[in-house]
Image (cartoon, rainbow, N blue to C red):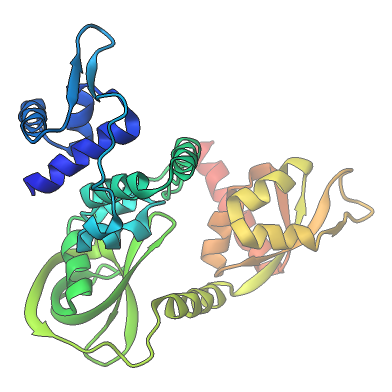
Length: 329
């Protein structure tokens, strides 16, 4: 491990130039004292590391020095695998691969020609992926790293899981087939004892134990294809009807923000308001879930929308608004 860390330190100085001991410690996830020892070790091995004093000081390599230890053959298994998460440092950290990803990126950057390495640095400076949605804390996933290891090793998981209904199931064996990050939420795709493949929200695992027992992956199983089909079925199951709405100009802006792709589709098919409708308003047909869910969702539009149909949804919304008015006086 120390040899790999020394190489990472060397590549940091080569790729980024002068760096202070605290900056190096933060990048390598070690103490400043460890950085001092590693700098001494590099110097003892013949690497010309220079220490600059003063407020703008730090450590740097002697001008013109470049190591030849930059080939991608130096990547460890974990570092090579972590490169597929290069655009998602947060999820890589969740999976326990944050340090591996940082080391792999350094080695890759050092192996690139100077022009390409500079372009890679500029891209990293200018683009960043932040997967979780606004105004929602990320799910706590204390068992994610262990689950990820079981996925990789093809080991059976013994789980204690709490379903969305609150029901708990303990000691259930699962064959972990893959992990999916959707909207900042981690899901485990696994085969249960009944041979069916299902999706499980990782934050709902209360306990996880890895068995010594292995398993064979289903023939022809493709994680991306499974997830795409699963997401399609989920969307079809949740969209249970269509509501006709009258929308204000502000409501038109709110609709895609509140309803996502369904809101965009509704606006694409929007029609003009009727003769007795307010000026500037439009009519749209919006895909909605069950009546109870639709009432809560549509209330988020406030006075910027009016439900015209179906009549039972309009009555349910009116009853909810009346109850709220009575409660708040």
